[in-house]
Length: 214
Image (cartoon, rainbow, N blue to C red; front, top):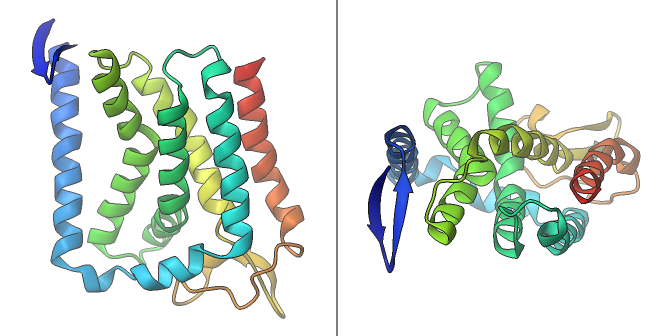
């Protein structure tokens, strides 16, 4: 183990994790560069209108508060108020677009830079922000980094699908990323017609929280 100075502490990591850390930091830099070089192709205003509608904001608030409050009581020392709130917020802000873009990529309908950025958002929200926070907090790269990727990715995908639900007249409940022009603000922004379709995703989040508490 070789010490790496950071602020007033020392960070210890085996060489393999050091390489991994450098690799994902460089990937994040590439993602930022891709975005800054072509901001016009990323529909931030449309995405904001798509995401910031009442039922999505309310369900996010309930989920984020619940996850944050129970985090210190899960018995997992890597979870506290800060990383729970951080990951919940990043998931809400990025998962609907990232999961939609990954789906479009599988259909051959997404641009390469959008795919790279979507994967970067996914990994940073579900894993890398957690790793970095614990590295700075504890001075060691978390041993749970790999397991966390799988566990958090399940919730990330579920959240991305959940916040993509919408009701379209004459078609019924669908996912927004299946529609032309994604992301667009839904014409109908109510929750009552999609609540039963959203229930499995909500139950999954509740079960995950209950599992750690029990």
